[in-house]
Image 1 (cartoon, rainbow, N blue to C red):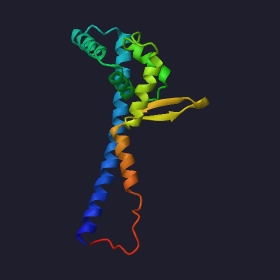
Image 2 (image 1 turned 90 degrees about the horizontal axis):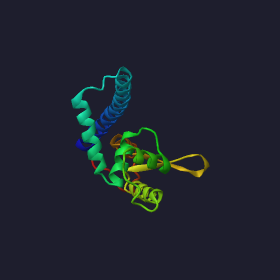
Image 3 (image 1 turned 120 degrees about the horizontal axis):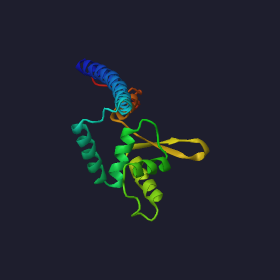
Image 4 (image 1 turned 90 degrees about the vertical axis):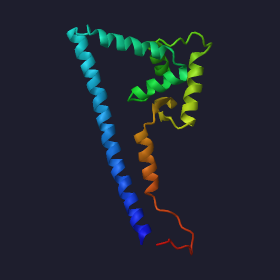
Length: 165
């Protein structure tokens, strides 16, 4: 009997967690949109004279310059809501001032990094038109929701085995 109560409490906790994660994902998206709006409005109004803001941006840029291609790929994919193709990712890496000139074939290196990130479960492949692939960061929320969905599937029991109560 206690096992049934624990299982029910576990199920309810997982459902509550799923609701909270979905809500957090919605809030994260809203925050990202608002950050873009604020940044665009600041640019339009010409109010980028805040020295601490400029100093902070420069610090972030310098920190990003020290990152390798794998870490920079992670950062870009985490920041980008929509999936990116390898070519689009290459453009963003160049925009972020990552020195790709040291690679004989930068796109091949990017493909290798993406394959490793897919294999590790950090990134998922999103099929595109004409057989192309795009890549998207797998958020913690996505991972937990997938795990919860898999946990909701009925458990296969062997014949003759009874569940303890």
